[in-house]
Length: 441
Image 1: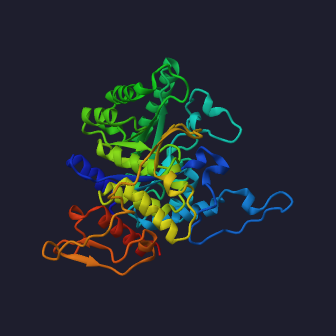
Image 2: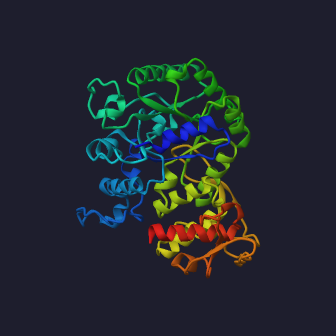
Image 3: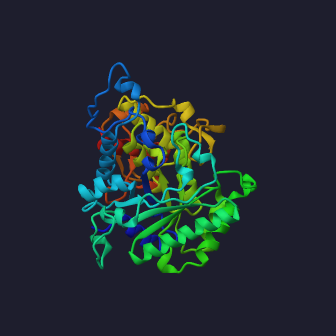
């Protein structure tokens, strides 16, 4: 099966105006957060709770609070079955279970990937202080463990024959410290050469400094961009990353990097959970200014309904729905499924300033997005006259009721497919809710 990642990379490189966008779910948090990596048990897979034994004199299952690893794996299986994301990033051990032992990616358009190194600035364990120390290079997983689950894979001319993943995430953290940055680059060079020999593909994650670097916050984008270009200038095509994963430093720095080298496919990382609008606005703006990949870990894993959240990300990058409309539609989905949102809509539609560090605990400021007169929750549906264009009428659904809509309409093309170019905000919202209702009811 042709993987959607490969098809999109080919399209992006051949057509710079393409809207093709790669979405990755980062389920590799066990290499950073330990027990807490699986996230809150408030959202479980359809199969529900997996039984566990807790001594009542110690605590109850509810007091434990976090999903068990089997419950975490069930959610990943659901997302793989959904076939909306392009990449599933995992730890080597989770990759072994789902890719090697269960073979879930053999007939899937989704590409499996594994975290290939775990520098100390992601060691965000409880009561630890590692993330506060300057980042040190480290690798738990070897390429062989990722490809075949063993210390040494059998020789093969085609690495796609391996049962595991043949794509890895390698991260580097520049600190503006000569000796530490030199050591990090030497470790990267060693990994690059091993990956080339084993025909192992990788994408490069570049973190902002995790300690004080002496660089003004508003100039970190310049520091990171220059380091990326300087680093890759000495690397030929055979050793280059498939794409980049970086902090989004705003439109100017994104466009600067993308325009410098059209062959670079640039992606953004999600950072801390924040509000739903934070996630939807980030992926929209990053795409608008040149990014073609988004890797959201905590933003997806902390969502009340991960499948619906992912679906909204895809609708945004496909240009079907705006970030603001997506927040309203997502809350309508939660209401229809009787899932209590983490934040009420009025707070979840706020844009917050977030830290992209692994130990981020909160936000510094908020920007409220007021309801406009043409807001999806206020706008009256006005059918387009039949003489102008054909319309489609559907029966009222639970999701339509959640936003107060009756007999939603949206324009169609001559072949009966939705005409997104002629849709107003209510058309797009009604169509998106109808689609979600069909998939998740």
